[in-house]
Image 1 (cartoon, rainbow, N blue to C red):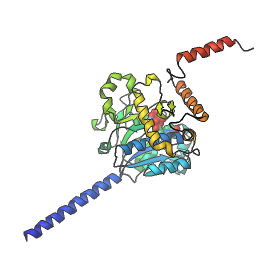
Image 2 (image 1 turned 180 degrees about the horizontal axis):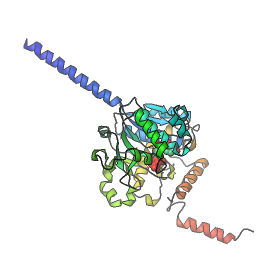
Image 3 (image 1 turned 120 degrees about the vertical axis):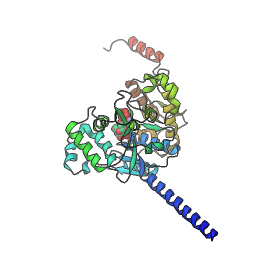
Image 4 (image 1 turned 45 degrees about the vertical axis):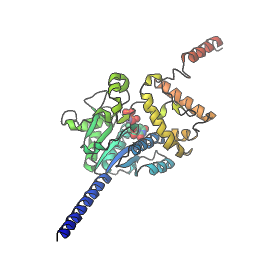
Length: 352
Ligand code: UDP
Ligand code: MN
């Protein structure tokens, strides 16, 4: 008799734990990391981001939203890494608000990001810009509620829209679109619009303020270097905001070392980490049939002296980094080289 009760309890407990496990599994499969890529160059960022999430052993699903600006070959590659590649096509939208938005090309990228609220197969999601990089496990973000985000370093009463927790919902999507039409975005991008929509974020509930370590924006390391030195090790997600993206840094394919300007300081290690993941997981699967930087990088042979085409590419990247204010002071842009170029030009005299 006692024996039977013992077995009944054991069976009952077993079933209880089993259903608990199932419930947990269900919750996890209804939660996802979401990113966006509208072209092949940003897809490189999305791919590295996905590998950075896998590296830290996330249990949530990986979703990338793409537009037709991403080549089919790249979409295949994204499909191999993400659990879901979700094609968002602005022209597919049939309702009046969407059509009106089509007449506002300035809201193009903003519009595309808002599509994340339409991923209603999922219950809760965390959006990550394609220029973010996950350094440490951070699945605990899914314990937060809509709308959670970290302060923007430029104006900390606004949140930065590169990392945010949200709940997909068609109604929210529609309200956001109406707001975009009626008021527009005060900065022309998604961040201005979202800050207007979730305008009580700064004051309502401190739990909706993500700690800065979940969205450490790249300029912070020089605008407040002592804090970066003190807290930098705790950073979980780095965000390369502005024009200095990891993929536009000077990269020496022979040594596999990134060579950003010396002013990049501690960021160099983050850039290098991005390139390490790129070399290990992304580069082997690139194809010349891809577009933009992805196609150019596919020609790069890692660990070998660079062929002419790659040298040309490196030169182009170096030049665009220069134009964006990040110079290769120690290398091609060194003072000696610039000085000899000036002297060369001066000695040649004026063109007749
Ligand atoms: N994005 C994109 N294609 C573009 C520009 C932006 O797919 O041409 C996406 C991408 O996910 C990117 C996000 O929109 O991370 C926001 O843009 P970005 O990160 O360049 O803005 P920042 O963080 O520098 O303000
Ligand atoms: Mn960004």
